[in-house]
Length: 222
Image (cartoon, rainbow, N blue to C red; front, side, top):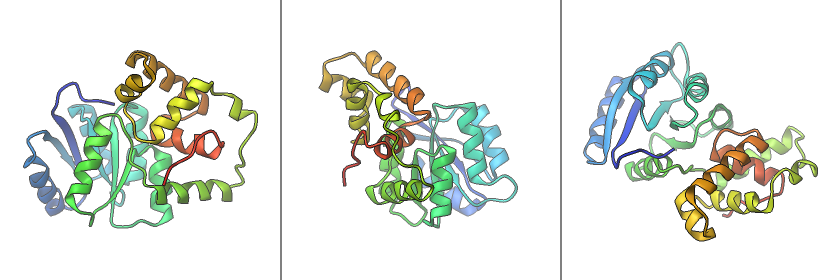
């Protein structure tokens, strides 16, 4: 998902007023970022997302009423193109796997440097997805625990070109960069990406890359 202008519209969701205020000030000090709304719980985030059409949603995972993970799932169902970054104080597996399964494109700890959040926002707003090698390893290990072994039949779903594009997605390449590297049009790349998502039963880059790695089609580089 890529903004139509250079300005990135952001929706902040967190149940702590002071945290939202501080984060808003920090983000709006960057001229390319604009906070279009705030929400204090998951239900409000879903509503505000429908009203403000943000490019990126910053989602706290632990909130009263509807929590962040349920809100991510609902927003993803309503708007598959929006970028969603999970914000949390915890990096335990329950929060991590829950956010990724629900459809988060990225995962940032609240105590991380502001620069890391800014990099993540820009990458996801450009159609990318942030998933560190350490997090990817943990997610793939979780898949293994569930007994989901690579299926040889599944590995034949993707064409050679689709596998090539999926590997480039794993390297955080944008559709435009992939098009230039492979000497094909951006429209063709996006069509291939749509086919990849459909064949792997995924809705975003993060899940497609993880599934492709699980099937042994690509490698997530460290």
